[in-house]
Length: 110
Image (cartoon, rainbow, N blue to C red; front, side, top):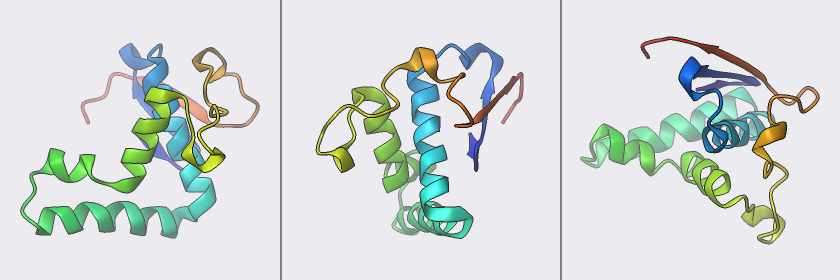
C-alpha cells in the first residue's frame, strides 16, 4: 500500500521486485497528482465500478491508476515515455534510490 511517498509492505513481500515497482509507480502518481487528485481519481474510479455492480476485486482491477501501475511493474515499460523502459525497471535499486520512497515492512493484517 502506498500513502504519498510511504510504501508499506508485509515483511515477506520486501524482496518482491514486481510489487515494489508497482508501489513506486503509485509514489510517482501521488507526486504528480497530489493527495486530492490521487484520492479523487482512485476512489472515484473504484466507486464507479462498484456502483455498476462489480465485485470489490473486479472494481479494484479496473481502477486506471492500478492498471497503469500493474502494466509498468510487469513490463518495465512506460506508455507515457513512448514505450521506452521505465525508470523503475531495475528492482534491485528500488530501496536505495535517493529520496524516492520510504519502504516500511511488517507483519500486518490489512
